[in-house]
Amino acid sequence: MNPILIVDDNEQILEILTQYVKAEGWPYLTARSGEEALSVFDAVSPSLMLLDIMLPGIDGLEVCRRIRAFSNLPILMITAKDEDADRILGLDIGADDYIVKPFSPGEVMARIRAVIRRMNEHAPSETLVIGSLSIHLPSLSVSLDGHKLSLTRKETELLYTLASSPGRVFTRDNLLTLVWGYEHVGNYRAVDSHIKRLRQKLDAYPHSFFSIATVWGTGYKFERNLP
Image (cartoon, rainbow, N blue to C red; front, top):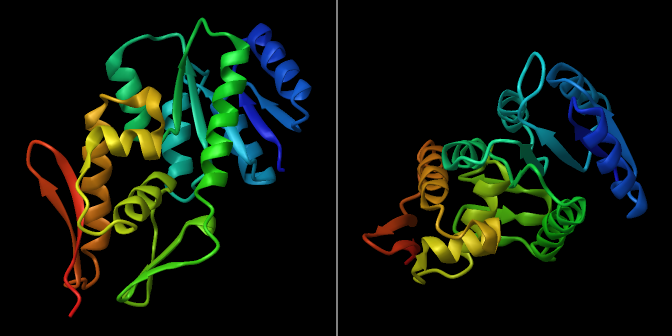
């Protein structure tokens, strides 16, 4: 397992988190600013990032945005802010989970384990193929009409979940539970914004044989139009 990167400018919090991560037997590295976090990320390719929002220089949200432009690294945002807008923004830009200070270090470790467990659970041995759409979830590789798509981890998991059960109507709460985890139930904006971006990326190539349909007032479903 590559190191967990812990990013926080508060020395006390950094020390607590590193001790807990070390106790779990996981390797770790630390960073105290957004610039340092990006530098360490480029050099090491961590397996997961604990990322504080309030950082000197580049803040955590911008760090998350930059990483999400080309990487599906699992990111858990940590902040002292307890506002819905901040949580929604963090999830919208691609964070996998959101932890509010003050927190229990044990809770943080539980959330890390949950993210890793979801990654392992979404590790099928075969590729899902529908027409010219191919989804290989373990490698987060998606191709359509022979073109490799640049999808985030959540976009890939969302597409895989829908495509695995063609015709099934998934409520937004279903998708939040299956893709984000039960603690995010009710955050419908995260689902809608990810579906919007996923459709935009899919629409770059022909795919008349399937669509992601909106079921008004309920959620979404994957419709197959294969002969």
